[in-house]
Figure 1 (cartoon, helix red, strand yellow):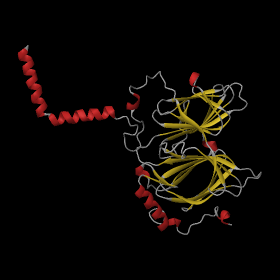
Figure 2 (figure 1 turned 45 degrees about the vertical axis):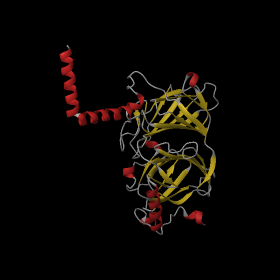
Figure 3 (figure 1 turned 135 degrees about the vertical axis):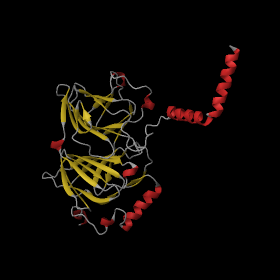
Figure 4 (figure 1 turned 60 degrees about the horizontal axis):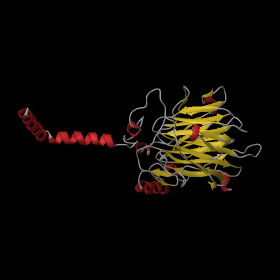
Length: 363
């Protein structure tokens, strides 16, 4: 036995010396995989974040409700030319919630708006809730979205445009949501583009015996898929309205960042002792761990609960933002400012351009 042990020890020592580099490389690789708990370990647009942060995969018959990280009121402020917005993402309360850069709940009364301005490096998603808004850009694109419609704009390497409200016959304000979504680094210099999604194109579904109505703008809900992908960065957007006594369990992609913005009424999120009731104009930020969100409205509630539920794939990149320019380094931001001032590298068409819809603000 002692002879065998001696022989085994000599053999191990010999192999360790001979294959030292290979063994060290393998150990380092295993160590790296074990300790890598970053959800953005894979560069670019990975479809599903690594499960390392969750340990073993969740069994098929088990789900994990998402906890609430924080919930806060979106304070109204001035923006653009006379517009009023309730900004939640992009404030000290919530910055760089990748891939989300900004969320504004805007109210634009007659005579106000967002005249000619530039963008680079992000996508904007505008969801109109009331009224109508015109848009126009320096590439000759122009159009109008009305209540229930959405506009997905990719700024890419550079765009200059204007967003101005239509005058409503009754003089009422135009109301909607605008979400800024970061672009992956490799797409920061892509060509700008617009895509409109009309209200009639959006699939919807009723659940809980008709007490819950879901518009599937992007993503899926209860077996119903959205029409098409409209943004480069994967994002789910669901418009959910719950009548008193109604409830919903909505699945979300595991590892994606998610939030709910409450438009009206009071909605309770989570269940049991963890149930939290949230009022109007709040952003409810969910923890990243988990794969479903619970929401309900009390039986004795005076009005429906209405909120937008949004989830997006986190991006593995640094965010450096200066106003409408969103890049990955300070040098790139300086370059964007220089390009805009010199009408170059994507901003050539900005030279001398002035939108027709924005001219009303100049008078």
